[in-house]
Length: 456
Ligand SMILES: *[C@@H]1O[C@H](CO)[C@@H](O)[C@H](O)[C@H]1NC(C)=O
Ligand SMILES: *[C@@H]1O[C@H](CO)[C@@H](O)[C@H](O)[C@H]1NC(C)=O
Ligand SMILES: *[C@@H]1O[C@H](CO)[C@@H](O)[C@H](O)[C@H]1NC(C)=O
Ligand SMILES: *[C@@H]1O[C@H](CO)[C@@H](O)[C@H](O)[C@H]1NC(C)=O
Ligand SMILES: *[C@@H]1O[C@H](CO)[C@@H](O)[C@H](O)[C@H]1NC(C)=O
Ligand SMILES: *[C@@H]1O[C@H](CO)[C@@H](O)[C@H](O)[C@H]1NC(C)=O
Image 1 (cartoon, rainbow, N blue to C red):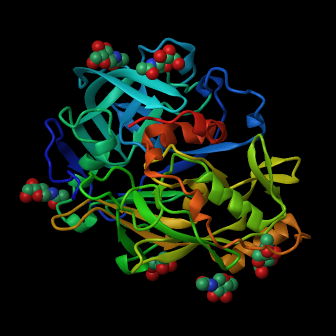
Image 2: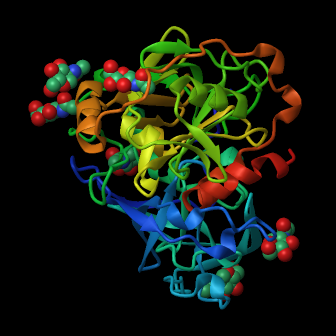
Image 3: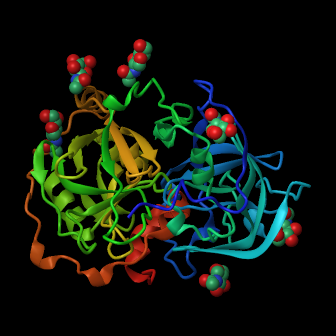
């Protein structure tokens, strides 16, 4: 079923000034370290988890709301725009830039409430002039949030969600999402897309709206397209694709049956707001057993920092499926190492939280150029992907950096144990859990997922 956007007109969205000059659709995107905020932890959570030793990063974009600049987390795993309000006086938003009312603010007097796995954010819905890069939306709904933000020390003032309206907390009767507004600026429907590449350091990221970044793709022929997956009869909710299989050093590794009823293969969500790759615990355990040398600790799966393993994700419908390889440095994640010897695994297990099977966060997304297309007449929303990791180059750099791996080669346990698969009863919403929380506390998530299902 086609998603509601971009054809549906909201009540309040008017795009007043849109630059369509080539090269003007590029919006700076920065990778920044995040300090972990204690307020994001669940009460009673075992604080013994070695979170402090794990670096976390977030991809932030600068936006202007009513003439005030904010850094917000770019999040393809949620759908609302919210920023801290000057009405927020709790320690939660100490030290972050806050929105103050301007003459262009108009109150919609609707409460805003968003549940995250690790808490909740609340505030009030209003509308304002919002500028993203060269795009100005004269009346964009957003929430001025006052509670539960957990922003202290995070460097950002809120979140810009870029997922589908079906998952927005702000009702579509109040106004359209940022993505709907931005993409509706293009009369040429082939330009109704946004694209990004997540960088490995502060300024090597790219985020464009309505055009490709020539550093990563010059034409649609450079990308492979797949429709966004949705269950029959349901609205599109997240940027989802079938994940047909994994490969471990070239050997195919089959996955457990999908939890999502009617899905042709396990379903993966692309989510910039999540740090790692998360999948069903039994598949992830079999994955690390296949790699060999890994261990499971309170932090999750850890792997020797010199263990070189090439992982491929075979994504897309069976006719258009393609393998996207991941830099070994993303699988053995040194920025989160313990004494330089044990690195945090780029894949971690979780069960039962998602309306999907796998969550492909930054660990995966750094290896691809990805475009997100709105539905157009007669076409569902699409995802375009282009692999960017040259595995020969990446492997050589890894070995140069980490030294030779003395361990035995991988022994791939290719077959999934289907008798153990999860059932449809485990389907819950992935919702905003991934988005906000993950950049901040993904490691906490890994250990709390099983006990905190969202019920849908
Ligand atoms: C937040 O929104 C509410 C309701 O629209 C409004 O009363 C309040 O003044 C707003 N606060 C700010 C700082 O904009
Ligand atoms: C939101 O979080 C606060 C603080 O953790 C909690 O007291 C409150 O019950 C939560 N509200 C909802 C609706 O979950
Ligand atoms: C899109 O079409 C509308 C109505 O025909 C026109 O007013 C507007 O200038 C066009 N926008 C662009 C960017 O071409
Ligand atoms: C796109 O074209 C430019 C100019 O010809 C070239 O420098 C660049 O490498 C191309 N990009 C890709 C991804 O092929
Ligand atoms: C990867 O890089 C190597 C060395 O630069 C080059 O020879 C090879 O053609 C590249 N492979 C691909 C698939 O581009
Ligand atoms: C994976 O393959 C690479 C390249 O052949 C090799 O260097 C590495 O040791 C292999 N890793 C494992 C875990 O077998």
